[in-house]
Image 1 (cartoon, helix red, strand yellow):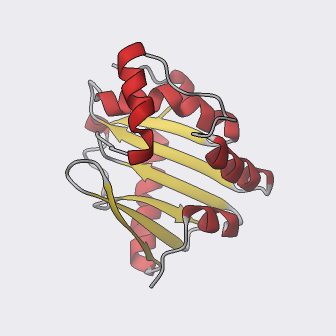
Image 2: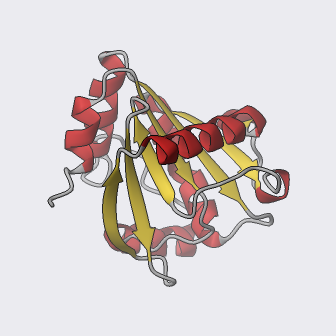
Amino acid sequence: MKVPSFSELMESAHRSAVFLQMRDYYNVSGETEDFATWQRTGRREIDPDSEYWKSWVEVVSQAVARGVAIRRARIVSEPVSDSIRYMHAGVIVNVNAGEQVRWLPRRRASDIALPGNDFWLFDDHLIRWNHFGGDGDVTAHEESNDAATIKLCADAFEAVWARAIPHNQYEIS
């Protein structure tokens, strides 16, 4: 079964799209050059009209304009990894496109029941799992509309969100 693209899923969202990220290391092939530049210089591509960001900003901005609330929460180990520092350095683009972003130190998540993989949850009825290999590369995406799994994910996200620190208040350690 073909899993719809992220853009297709976001275009079909009516009320909400929430994203829970729980890894300390992501190796996204399309970010290799930008990540290397950031490691050398401390500068990150944050132009929303750049080739790197343009399609993401369009998808998110259009969804927000339709009234879709987009929230992203990240559970992070502290001190954070270079991968998380890199993500933090660019998240201003996500925020300016309309995403709400929060950060939760992992030590504050110990008593939250969490699913085993990062996920997007659209309108509280469809999950898109993001599967990664040990090296941080995306290996697959999978969908689920199982009611019990959706409840687990929704409850986990809301518990994380309630404890997490808004992006503009979270300082990288």
